[in-house]
Length: 320
Image 1 (cartoon, rainbow, N blue to C red):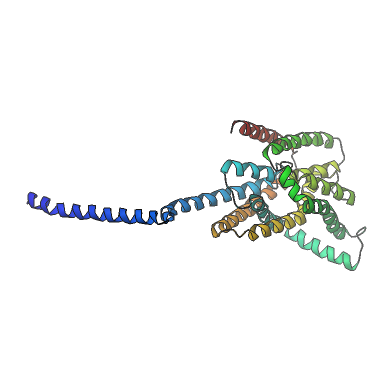
Image 2: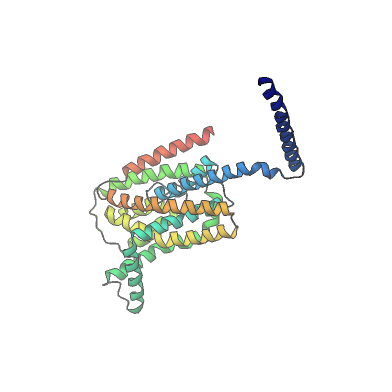
């Protein structure tokens, strides 16, 4: 019986070997005729999966750093370099992530946004910004948005070409930290107030212009500007978030348009969606946290973080 089974097994082994030879020959034929993409399916799937993970990471980074005063543009630029994650237009991808943080702002401040829109249109029917607090709030936000909107529209390409690099981020992170320490020391000797004037709106608006430089931080620059104008921390943070709405909306929509004009692939569209969703959820949580945190704390912890992050980034740039 043992010999009989052995004799039967040999033909089966021979058939398997022949089948393997046929498959191997077909694979070689496909490769010789330019069909090597057949071999790359696993690689493409792996690349798409890694791209989605990277997009999620960048969305989380955007949600955290857009509202904490530590610079979203600087962190996104650094993480692009760390992760080697690249789309056809990484700057437009980063800007499209602002749509997520814009959505977080709108959801969190929904009642305020609706009220501001109503107050704005009421001012067009009956102008009374001096006596109507709602009208004044609406117009201070518009005034604060004008400088960054204008400069960003005309100087966007110059900023991208000349200051969008990691060594600039190292310097601006450190510079911002020093400004935080100086303003906090000055504020402790001042009598702070919650009311935003038009003069304060202009100062905050020009601070948003400076924040176009990667590493400065829009929220950091505008909160510091509000403190300099003797706003209390809660009022400075709230106004900083609201005044960013028009600028973030305009920049995000403009860059998203550029990105879609580049005709991204289905995989890239999926990655963009993941990034926007992540930045929305995380951004909402961070807004809630920071507004509560600043009611009883200074910016010192963020200043120390900026120094540490700038130092770590400098070391990375030297040894990479």
